[in-house]
Amino acid sequence: MTTPAADAPRPLALPAGPWVGFAAVLVLFSVLIGTTGELDKFLSAGNLRVLLHEATVPAVVGLGMLLVLISGGIDLSVGAVVALVSVVTMRVFVRAGGGADTPGAGFAAAAAGVGVGGLCGLANGLLVTRLRLPPFVATLGMFGIARGAAVWLADRTTLAFPGKPPEWVEGLAVTSFTNPGLWSVVLLAVLTAVLLRLTVFGRHVYAVGSNEAAARLCGVDVNRTRVLVYTLAGLLTGWAGVVMFAHSNSGNPTLGEQLELDVITAVVIGGASLSGGKGTVVGALLGVAILGLIKNGVSLFNVPVEMQYILIGVLLLANVALNQWRRAGK
Image (tube, rainbow, N blue to C red):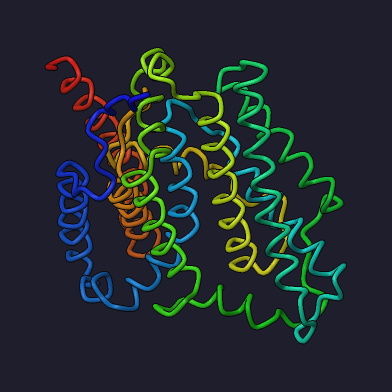
């Protein structure tokens, strides 16, 4: 049967709103930091490396959250899942004979971490489709389960490497333009955009989020689509957890606190709709960049901390209001 037309799915398009927001935040912080005499540091290549490094984890999680929001869902479990992945990665690494020179231990640990993320995503999808739980409730429950499992597996402590961290961990942790984690964001962003724009599955994701009833009438397997979306989001969160594990050099059950709120805010600021059917890869990455820019300016250049909360709130409200206005005008 014919695939329902989605509401203008353009994953590679350049959304004007997020670009304007990014430019406005950049100009505002340039003015504020310029008064302190540190504008050259703010606009330096060194600070750009810091920005990109800190944005790696939320960008990867944001790609998964984009898929979930487009399909009409939400995922509140990502922060806890990142923590669980970091603990599992460390446990598997040590069990596999973890050491700087142990062949295969790193691959096994990373694969286990990504796999745990995928299993959590699959569980979310099944809770939403099989038990018909609202996504908010299902993923909030997974948040508690994942956080509790992380604390239990870590024995209520932070797990450190038994010796010197292996080279692959140091490579993911270094603040550099050549960091593999940073380039993984580029690769995953391209793959996500291709998935959304050039595949039948991508159009189904937009269709389910735009109008679930119409999608069903057109022959879309809504439950299957949702399960796949949550599973893919879980795999992306799993990889983000492995990167966070490398950044922190530990398996830490407290990692990822507030990550879900930051990522949802970033993706919505980037143009995704909380009601589904709308969002782009470029917009999601711009949203992450905007939040990263705000936090960077506040933490490193003595910009008043209240500016962070005010700007994030204003940008979020403005974006949602603009989306509502556009929908009302159709």
